[in-house]
Image (cartoon, rainbow, N blue to C red; front, side, top):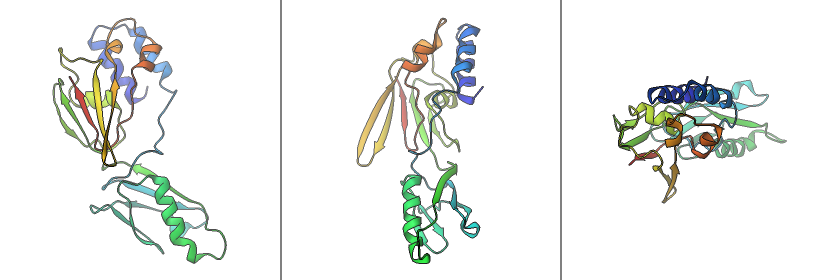
Length: 204
């Protein structure tokens, strides 16, 4: 059972839901796993960088507090706020002068999102700001905040996300997951999403 569904099963058990729903959640946990391609890099994150066929250029680097990384033959790169694919392009462009032909493929992945930080506010037992050091979704965020209190409106949980100079929001509807008889359709309709760094979860 993955971490998300373990948390969901514990929540459901604590609210009198059937064991069958926990088993259903386990069965569906392998579907729809989120990718990390849209994750924007933060200061403190650990990156894995590979230049294929060039072992001397394969390494792990930590994003410095000023949001930069240093890479051989390229120099300082502004990484904070960028997608892994954008860092790949910057490194490839920086290496062009080192090769007569085509630059080997560059792959950048986030080994540890240690710079990820989010906040949970409203009707939860322990609101605050959290730095989990890993990817989390809305359910896991609520668990870290002690879970919703008895007056929480779980069909109107909002996530506020900064996108450039704009604020974007999406609603999460998870009340049905805390009731006996919840099914796969309720899980899909819940709109459970992975959080990004800087997100604020509000539980009214």
